[in-house]
Length: 63
Image (tube, rainbow, N blue to C red; front, top):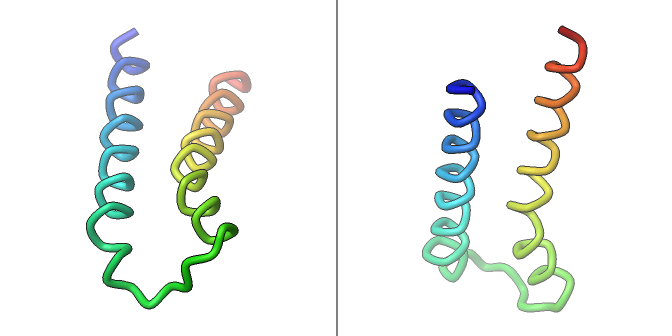
């Protein structure tokens, strides 16, 4: 149970860091402001977390 809570906390911290990176660092990058780019930046943290959770689920399923 402690490992799961620790993992969830790590994911939340990673998500917060990525959100802060998008908010504060992204405006200084020379990225064109198109709808597709905005969608990628908005969905990227969620997709990364989903991949991490799926990977974690697969590793726990095997043990």
